[in-house]
Image (tube, rainbow, N blue to C red):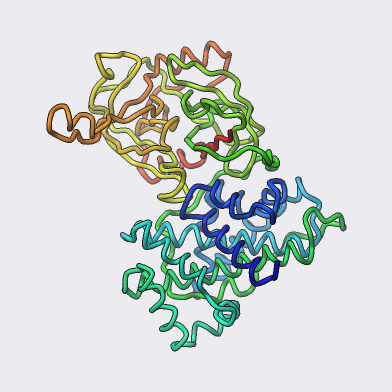
Length: 453
């Protein structure tokens, strides 16, 4: 296979992996080029940045031509730390570290920029149009994107913009400039993957070199994209990622949260149902400690130093109290980072007066399952479990219910943890936290879970 053809296949795969479809689709696109262990290694830095939420700070520095020296230095430290985490798992040469860092940078830009486009109103179909254009680019166009000179080439920009509009991208400057940045980063990331495969191979054995700094282009290149709306995370990257089993496919995702020291994670039983392997997005493999199908709770464990959340020291939620829900809806399609919503407790029981459940109004989507429901002091008061089927209710009563979602009550959660001798922390609710601080607290302890079958 020629380098041009290989670049096209890998470019489409990294675009798919990052944003537009289930990661399993990207895995299929790379069949015959990389096996699962090679793919895990080559995406190691990107996976860690994505899992911790540090993609936002990396992307912000890359797209901002006026980034300060302090911002560049901070982003460089984050990138070096991620490379160091991967070095604990893989014996890389300096060249391999450089390629992995470039993939991490540009994968971050793709994720953050497309997430911002979605927040600004671009549909999933319009975002897919960016990658449709990527597939159709000629060799000369791809070479042009590899040099910052394209930023001053108005004729080139107008021609590519016409292709983007034809592919469904709205004809607005802010959408087109961000779409151009996505194209650039996809090409540069794909090129780094190709160079890795063709020149360095996988798993080099030479003496390790110091972690690379962010390439100089990261601080001076911008196609007009704004900074991310999503913020950044403070979570640690955790332990080294484990290689993915080559014969297993990613079939679903959900949300979990750290409940105790030692890497204990709570989620829903239906999130782990049928899974032969559970991992974090970084690839870190998790053990399934216990499953309580009747309560729809599961306990997982993996090596981690993440800070656990605390459980509220009471047995029930309070009617009309404010809550914050954290999770990864729609498998990370809405955003690669964590998603938070706020609402209130609307009922202290579930369907049919089920006291094992309570109702809340904070919006949730598929993928939120297993996430924590926090009170405004930052204590867990329940676990997201389901939402009311609006279409079914509409068929029955002729009206669509609004924001009727269900959580697992504290009584069930505490009993489940006690049955498993989990050494969790409890505390009474006190002063209310600012919503921004509360979101950061949730972000640091909430994780995307992946199910392989």
